[in-house]
Image (cartoon, rainbow, N blue to C red; front, side, top):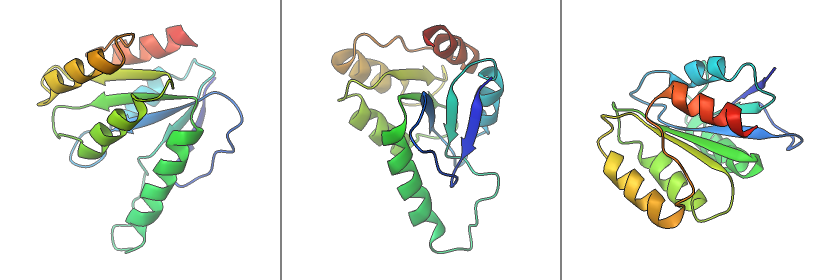
Length: 147
């Protein structure tokens, strides 16, 4: 059974953790779907989407970004989901950064994601070993199979 850690709760780096990278703003809560699909796994799931983001707190964004920065590095693997509703500029930045490492990555792209071809081409050039999938179910299946 997976363990779940939501921002801003801390992960101590002990155990196999997978970070849920991808859209948070202006898109569906895909993270809750993937968490449900990964329940039978031994993964520690690091979810940056908070149930209640304090939008009125001027320090909230800085705390969020710092948490994500730290936990992306603590995670043993990172999954990316690119939904169709938003470009996900931060997730693209994170994908670029972590595709230059040997950290295991799992990438899912909604078939109607506007920058789908960019993700496919760039990933194939840098990490040809990564098999991009096109649904959350396929992404979960790939992650479950790996662990």
